[in-house]
Image (cartoon, rainbow, N blue to C red):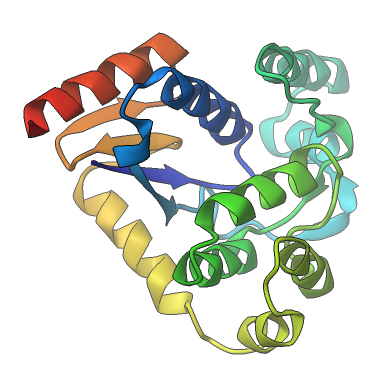
Length: 212
């Protein structure tokens, strides 16, 4: 059984959803038969990376809310993250376009390291406040999961894997995905958002039963 997950590494609910899905998978007796395919989706392709600006200040500027309101909204996501064992540092997270990170995800997928790179990028962005649009940071993250630093640097300087990122996004548009995380089970059942673990478990069971 295949589960495709459309996700953006700068989306907090994608990281939370990943944890909830993983918890469901742990409870699923046939988890060894599940293949996970990560798919690229940029929530804001036009976003300009601003290493001098944190996400709170950007939110205040973009949404026209007060800093206090922004902090309250962020604290809700931080609390949700805590419930699944994540320690978010949203206030310091760097405002960064995620296209280069998605290129790295596509390269890692081609080497069988899709899960590892997703986890490493999420952690870098949400917990370690690293700039996920900085090629040096991306090379360092890639090397930490066993990828070749020289090859990753060359890829980031080229248009390699640009096509694969855009293909994933086109596939998402074709099936009507407008937000992430978005999980598709065996091209048949969909779960949208960071749903409770039980919802993922039920969908895994349903999709597996249909297949048998």
